[in-house]
Image 1 (spheres, helix red, strand yellow):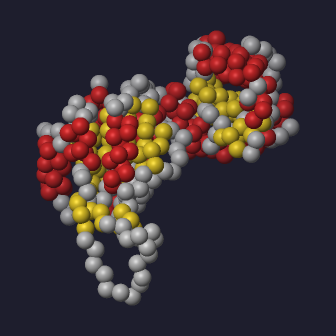
Image 2 (cartoon, rainbow, N blue to C red; image 1 turned 90 degrees about the vertical axis):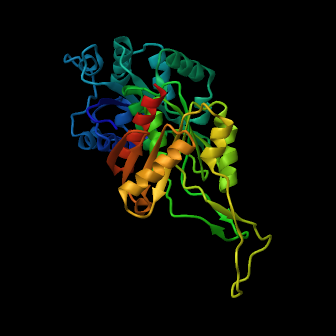
Image 3 (tube, helix red, strand yellow; image 1 turned 180 degrees about the vertical axis):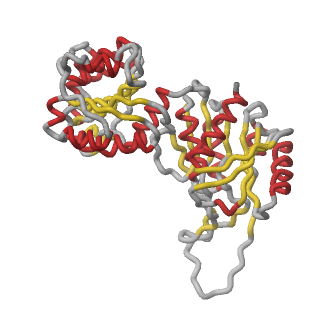
Length: 384
């Protein structure tokens, strides 16, 4: 996600500075090279040696005759992006006022003057985050193109965002954005059909592929809506659903504003009338199954011009048969393309898929994160 990206990590004096060792590790896991810059207050919370260990680079703790701020963040500086994480109210106000009295604020002024992307992850007590001057400073910086990673508002604090959210916003800022201004709706994971208040009919889908596609679309500039089981994610608006009928209604609720739909969910083909009370064990039972509407067919009928990406799962292990089934779905619902794979990858970390269009088939194999990137790139080509 961040292969070849150089990140200057500016750390200021919030207690959230203790999280920067793991943040630096996560940036590096995603391919980035990291160099840290610290305020004096930050050094009272976490020792520079900890960040030197985490980044495997020396840490800037003062600006000397070597003009470290220019070397890192100047016109031809080392960094591709300046990440201020955590950023206190004090640091945010100083950056907005071009006050350069710490190594971090001096790097920020230099980066903004040089046109370098800047990402800020605030961390402070909630009353400070609500201060009119802090809000004005944030608005000023956003007007200058600075990207803010919203904090988590909990326990009277504006806590620093999770590492995943910060890394995704850094990737979004520094990467190509072929999906800029596009609203992509993605269905993900299994659906569940209630048999009674306790039991459900479901399947083995994990939702990893759908979430990976959502992340990849977000990094490429899209506004993402994820229609799935309700798990909150930092890169998308979530429409929480459980059953196939709820998923269809969830997609309908956002389809008017959508530029594309990626139907990655493993949607139940059958539903059952729900018993009002728990069915007692030990009795002979039979369930009358009713087919559910096909989501892509229903949305295609209602939105004839909406680009839709379909998914086709088979169990035979035969590529030729899988492509044939994918092409049937492609033609029936007039899809942009179909992602076909074998059911054996459900729940696995890695997968192999075939991207099937009317006249071509592309094979991709790798982690679900990598597959998400391939699907997002293919979607960007379609929308272009």
